[in-house]
Each structure stands twice: as structure tokens, then as C-alpha cells.
Figure 1 (spheres, rainbow, N blue to C red):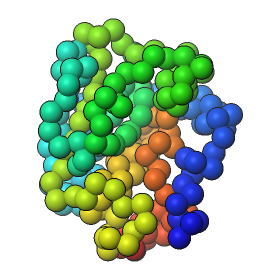
Figure 2 (tube, helix red, strand yellow):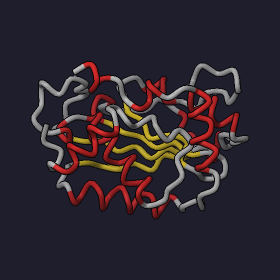
Figure 3 (cartoon, rainbow, N blue to C red):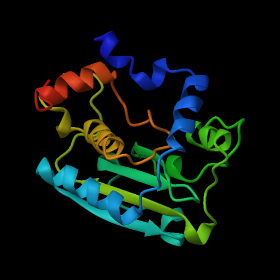
Length: 193
């Protein structure tokens, strides 16, 4: 089980993460409308129950209501690239951290290295996907029989679907909550553990 817990994210050093992020800059920027369509198609094919909110301006930076335990979000750079596909129950964690190559926040750090910025407050944008009938987290896989019954599994599903469609994501590995080799194996088994 220890192997399962050591995901690609934790095993990749900052230098490798910078290289992966820089490679994302070579991809064409996909319009947000298309990104939402990709997400909806991915989730509908799995018959997951969800709502999508496209939050911009003050709504993107104000206190977010709702059930964050069961939410996944996408935040966008000034140029319109996906900065990160993330999840969590603490909304303050998903603000727009100061972009700096000294930042403890890896998304802000990678954006600095890639010379990306957050938009001005009135143009900030977040896509929030809220689910019903999901567990929050399931790192060990013992409390579920299918990864798509937990938020972390759905977060990974969305991130991988976007990458497969060529959507650039600056913080590419953030949504990978397990080693990719396990993810591929579970995908072949329709995400049953």
C-alpha cells in the first residue's frame, strides 16, 4: 500500500515539475467553453451527478459557498491556461497565491518559472465542479470499491481527460493522487479497485 501512496506528484522534484510545466506552454490555449465541454463529456460518460459553476471576477475571489469536501476546481492564468486542477475542503487554500519563484505554493512557483501570471481581480476565473454522492478523500482505497466514488478519483479523472484532449495545465501533476501506473491499471478495470 505504501507504493500506492507515493504518487507521481510527491516523487517528482521541483526541477522536473518546472520542465513539465514549461512543456505545457508549447500547447495551444483551449477556450474555457471547450474545457467545460470536455469536463462535462468526461463526467456524463461516467454518469456522475454534478453542477458546474463558472466563477469570474468577484465571485472567483470571494468566499466560496457550498460543499468543498465534494468539489473539484480549475483555476486559470492571465493567458487563459489552466493553472491547476485541484480539490479540497478549505476554500482559502484555493485563492490565487502570489506568483513567486520563492513561493511555497507549487502552482504559484511553477507559474513564476513559466512567466505566467494571475489575471487582475475582475478577470480572475475559476471553474468549480460540485458533486453529490462522493466521499471526500480515499488515499488508501480501503473505504471504496471504485475510485470514482471519491473526490480524489474524480479530480484525477478530470485532469487526465483534459490532458488527453491537449489542454495545457501548468501544474500538471497536482491532480495525480496516486502513481500513474496504478491509475492506468484501475482505468482498465473501469476504476474498480
